[in-house]
Length: 157
Image 1 (cartoon, helix red, strand yellow):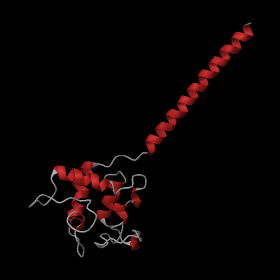
Image 2 (cartoon, one colour; image 1 turned 180 degrees about the horizontal axis):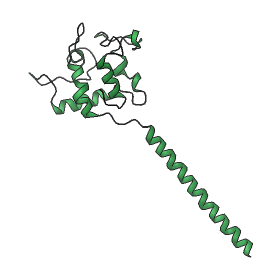
Image 3 (cartoon, one colour; image 1 turned 180 degrees about the vertical axis):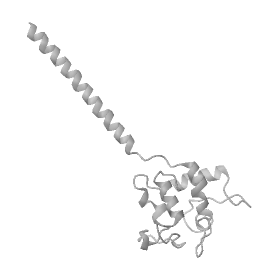
Image 4 (cartoon, rainbow, N blue to C red; image 1 turned 120 degrees about the vertical axis):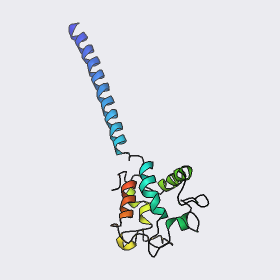
């Protein structure tokens, strides 16, 4: 009788241990999956450092804004209010939402945002031609680096 009680108790203990181990594995897997998720894109960094790039004049090129808010390019940017030199808060939030869609979160360095305006010589998109010209001759361009840092979840310098 004693050996029966012990074996039943042992079976119960083993069942509890197996359940705890299974729970620990699933919790660890969920934590690893959460850790692998990229951080959300930072709106404040976008507002201060990235949005101005789209309005900037670069020698030999049109501003991003010219084609992507007012021209023939995909309309990721939105027109500013008449007479304004930058977007208001509501407009900027929409621009942030639109531009965020151009970032491949699990592979930001290969995002449309970074590859399309980058010269193919520097590793930009060979298939798709950016009709506004390649805004960035190399990945050394400070504006390209700022966009890459933001898209990767880092704070640009």
